[in-house]
Length: 111
Image (cartoon, rainbow, N blue to C red):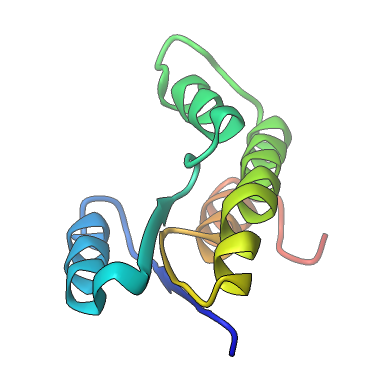
């Protein structure tokens, strides 16, 4: 048996975190909540940098930071949880990067 990966996506302040928490509560012990960026040492540091209003980051650099945080989260948390038959509920994932960096920051979604 393998696990299940669910992502909750939406605009800022639309209730994603609340919905992810409610879903995890309903699913019980098998559920594992993660957020992006975050969930690992690298992910939390990336989150701090990206949320710091005093740090100006170019669009490509921002996209690469999100990708690095996501790679760490998948390798260290998501993949092992899925192998262990967990249900991983992610507050944002790749779709957010496609919308924010690909669309809003004009990097495109093909690369």
